[in-house]
Length: 499
Image 1 (cartoon, rainbow, N blue to C red):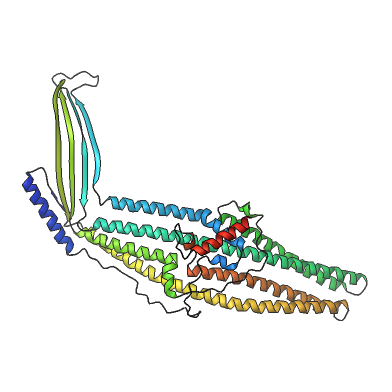
Image 2: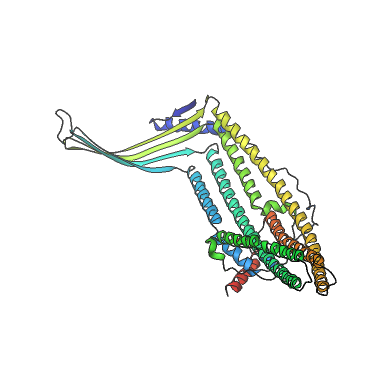
């Protein structure tokens, strides 16, 4: 149970000596054990990424501009300001900042007004009771209460709240980065699906023409019914590939609209850039820079900082807490209609509270804080490892997909040339229908794979930018001078789209 010592009204010299003794003893006890171990990450980062050469250049902040697609830049700019997930995250930041104010206010004196009024000696019907005096009392004043933060408990709590607010800000940045990459990914899925749809429709039209040609040859007795059915099968198969692609186009449009805070139908008329977007060369920078730019790692670091402060706050539970209360006011009294006058009153009291035996409560508080501190450190170190893994995976995936896209583009060109030869030979009657259909199937499969690879290459580049953690800085309320050129570039792109 806590030991409580209070200071009632007493002579001023005795009161001063007792307060001095309490303060001195509390400071002496607090100075012996308030310092607690602050945990920091001991993870050693490599000098460079395994899948990339060592470069000094940092990845571009406004990385979406490196694709050269003004429509993409406009979508990202709008989503950064209108997306509801980002706005909800900013509301959480506002609440966390209010929590900092609450924690800091606990370190300062609390001043309040008190007032009371009483009327005794009257019955319920307003008439005086026989033999009882009528007394009316009115008083008012100011009350002051203050916990002197001798052990640093309140300061540690305020610092933990500040770290929590920083965590909320970093988490909001992580949400912003996620939204930006979602916009880019869905935009590239949309452009890829539209490009694939054009390819499939063109191939379907070619196979419909083949079916018409085979049917005409059948009427002339130059082709069998079997040839006609095989041609019809390939034409139907090509047509069947169109509806899934139309679905993907619609879904991607709907997702883009929602990411920008609009109704799903708002992007029905969105016209992406027709040109083939080139994947930029990405400079990953150094592994150590991830800790400075990845918002999820910044949030984990802030969480560790908060846990360190709460561990220090928990350690102060072993030491005394000193409270000072004061009341100053004025009271007037009236009895049986006779004004007895008014008087001032004041009262100052101090209270010293210290745990002696609390059934393990204080030990449990410290054990909980220590466990949370260790967990926060492990979570931060695990986040660093996962961030390195994300970048390494992104570099490998982008490199390999780039090679695959080049080979598929070469194969698509060869398949197109082979189909041209097959059509020419079939028209001259030098081959039958089967080689022609095989050439058409090969061209369809290779061209679809090439288109998919190009889309996947763009998606992998977005994932790598996401793993590197940049882009959120561009939309910070106060941007650094290094970001200013990128801002001007995006504003120019947006104006071009608007015009």
